[in-house]
Image (cartoon, rainbow, N blue to C red; front, side, top):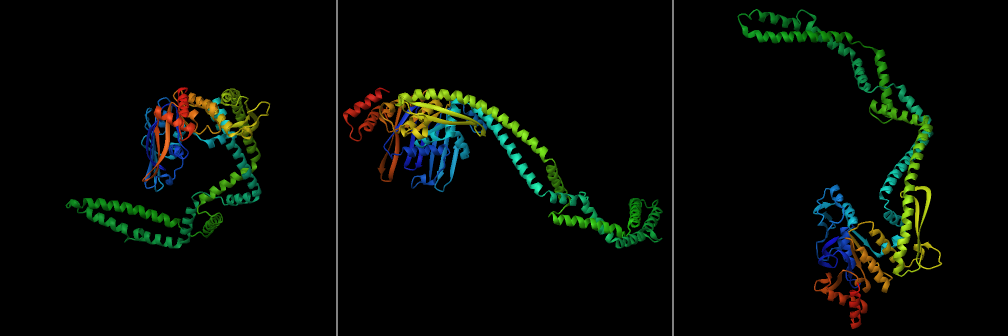
Length: 554
């Protein structure tokens, strides 16, 4: 539940620091006093979009902070999943907004994104304002109400997972059919391209080898001449380098006995002698292998020309890329050749997944039908004491073999406030006051299922008065039991008197401008406030007595 709210420099609020109680509380105040401003500040904590214009004139930033007691609710999983410190008795949410348009959000002093703040806020506070009554006219809202009361979350998640797989498979079929159709239009050209690359008999890495061999053959005479010259210098005549090294070794060996120092030099020369003999052997072998072969050179250049032509044509730079293109072309041809079999297999998968979805959807339908009967009965029981004694309410549930994100059901709330009148969609026949009472009754049913810590009703009593208003207050009072917190912003004294706690929002003019305030009223102050709500600024003795009576009967 909401324990404490702190607001600074927000709109007309200079500073607000107030605590809230559990159970059913009411907030009253004249139109324009600032009740909507306080709701706007709470909205910031729920992740709503911020506007720097909301900062109080003359201030550089505003702060909105709330403390919650979550000890009665199982919300610790959210904190574990997002690695945020968790204190069940004090969860602090803060939002800061600067005049530069920057916004920061914190959960227990941990900086978070607005999406995370919104995800937590949805589990902490439900603000029901007048415009939300319009949701009653929308099928997805009506479906959501039934699903909440039917406890279908597990089954709905399973269905949605199956539905997503069905959509994915269906899209795969659609994409493949389109690709095959396009390929068939170009089949002759694709086959030509594939044949063209296949005829080249490409091998990955061969381009570099062929280019090197072409370079060698093109300079074969120059290479052969250089190899012959090197061979001649090293080994071809009596005065070659190898024989001179051999002579040097022999001369040094002749003095080794008397001059041992030359032993290391002899060893090094021997190593050089052996290495040069090997080099000479390699040169001799290579010079014999080098021959100008015009036939081979022509074949190599023809193959390279083919490679270069294909690379230019297909806008690539390597043989590997050409081989990748060939592989892709093969796949396209295989898809064309095997398209009927592939599509049949995929269609079978889609049909199988469709049947699976229908099976999951039928479970949802069964649960929804059962819940719909309960909702019809309980809602009528709630609406009769709310001034609609002849209410008729029915949930029309139609099922079609057409998959939607929520199953195969279409739901419509049908309503009539009078006897012997045909039931029609609630949006067509219910007045604003009747819709408000239906919404309150639905919220009461939902609150028994969803353990939401705090529910705020913003003037849900529009269009009602007298005993009906008192009955609405009793429903909200009952909703505020069992650890829940219900706050009603109201203009009706009958509802204001039923609150266990009573807050007043007012504004005054100061030297620095208009400021909004909020205080918790004591018993005597409540009498005055409710009397004023009954009779206006000129509070009469009768109004005071009436206020006392209302408070005594709560």
